[in-house]
Image (cartoon, rainbow, N blue to C red; front, top):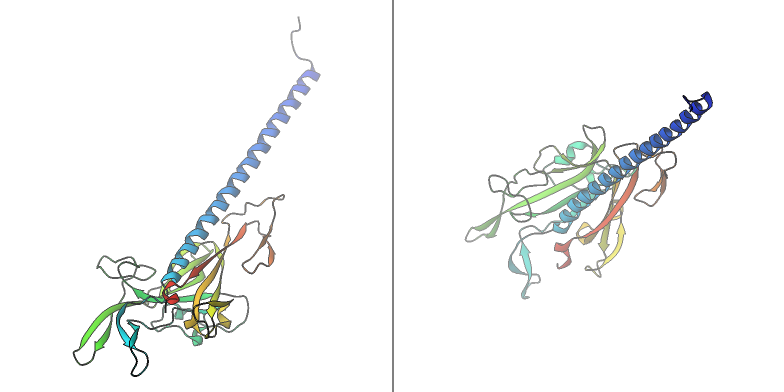
Length: 294
């Protein structure tokens, strides 16, 4: 009867044990990295969905204003057009950002004077205007319509009849969306408004925001003729839709040596994630519903 192990048997047993332990550790590491990658991609998908949904919802309301009576468009003609509380352009954008960050919360509407010159990378910002009410915005505790960051809006007064003094009140909101570095050190989607309060972050890890505006021709004002960048829009009142892209960046460097580092940005240009953070471009198109029937 054998009373013990020989040195050879012991070495074989140790070798087999090391192989089993090594295989287990490898499986653990691979599984853990795969899990982190899947969690990061899920966070990217969720962030993109939230960001695109917020922007699309705002754009669908762009240009909305209450009709309060029929009005004559030609002298001596019938009253066929609707007079509205606000006859303002629905959107306005800058392709290369603002010349100064103070314009993010200025009271006046944006125009070409606030846009930075065409230099450096694109940095789309957009102002979305519409009449806010208690249905299309979140009411404040005081029962007022709010802007994109929850601040109560100030009422404006429109005189309907100068002879009788009849007037009505309305709330105009101008919400501005842009990218900025947050306290975390990551690029985030922000919103500010003409109410003057500092902008607030909405979605983090948004590396790029890209917008193309669907503009109609004067001859066919109800049909989108082209999608162009902000710098190429000829008449903002003829914008009927907006194509959106958010380039999301993963919060963790989870890409390994065997993972694909290549991706396409919002312009469809191939790029490479050398920092091991996954990236993906997400798209949607929003129709400015209030403009389609005008």
